[in-house]
Image (cartoon, helix red, strand yellow):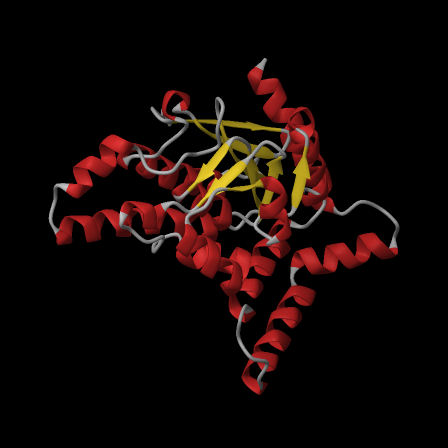
Length: 275
């Protein structure tokens, strides 16, 4: 599919989705929101894509909402604003629902909705030059649509500070409060991301999807008899699955599991197609 505001590349088992509006620091508008929603569905269905990386072209990852788009939204009524917010929320939900591991590659400005995109990914890696801000209250707004994802990443206490103060903070602070899991100097950012991707492609695709569903099922919920029964069903299903049986056989036979061989074959086939 051809896109106007993003680029997508699939190679070596990784799908990289680039936000591609560098002239406005990758600020999003209705076109980018629609294209990202489509792209997340596309990579989820692509068997050659084992992992997904979300990155930004130019000097920033994403500076939030496009000013012209915000101006248009300020001039329409409540109902149209509600529909627009639901569209953006659906895009974030589609990103969160991707069954494959997702990694945010962050540099430069990571502001407002850009923080929402990063928080909706499973893993966030930031350059030490990255700068973060939840600027909404300074515009008379609130970080509502991105709120559940950012709050899950940084916790209530940090959210109380940064949702309310709208102050900018650096990559070290983003790491301290848990918004990003790894930091790297700008020239080593891709090396850090690639190292994580190398670990992610070792996992069984179906098991990784099931692990993401598991996290969603138990996050912030008390342990109960009902939960433990659900967990028993989940692990029994994993053990009885083709991947579970193959993984155990491969471990006992001291060989690589079949999904690693399949991933290597897909990578070679993709490389031949591109020549």
